[in-house]
Image 1 (cartoon, rainbow, N blue to C red):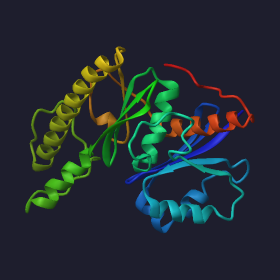
Image 2: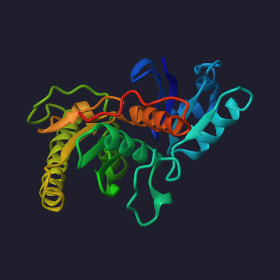
Image 3: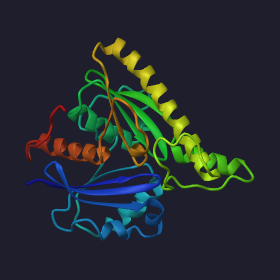
Image 4: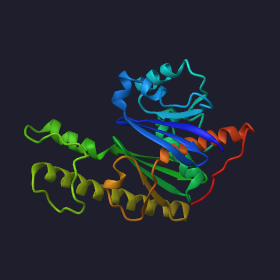
Length: 264
């Protein structure tokens, strides 16, 4: 059995998973802000024996704190970057600008989804990443996540309240019965229409470019709050990309063979 620990350090949340072969055996999630002062939350979580760890990060300060907390442990650590990307081509003008989480998502798509593929990751920022068989990581789109739209309203108006996306709102509610509900309906109705518009534009363009019809996969903390047609939800896609990167790296070193490079 192959075991690997995967860590995704994001702007709002940090996700940790232990894979046994291709399945997540353990999963934990932390608020990234909590890790700034308490990086030992990660070092206390990871396996001390056979502690192979691969991670991606978009928060350098938290990344540095976590690595310092791991320095005393006998853990082999790899990080995703344009030079550690499981051999996928990257067709991007400045490769160093690509977020490591987006590279991890691209790895997962390149080795386990039908191509061409579009990954929609709804987090603090929402990203669209386009992956093809020939060009690998082709490029993408970046826009504020749903919480960012709510925060904009709060920051730029005198009376509108601060709302977290965890506030429950029934699906398909056409309008709000309170200010909070009205704000949430406005964000999610408008946000969904915006995402659907981008999806249709990309679908037409990529079909014409690659002949094959692109597949669309959605992931991230806000993914289940949107009901997007023809978009498959893939839970923990970024962690799966990390697992595959680790697996392919050791395959190339002839340590073991991959277990789950397949097309869905």
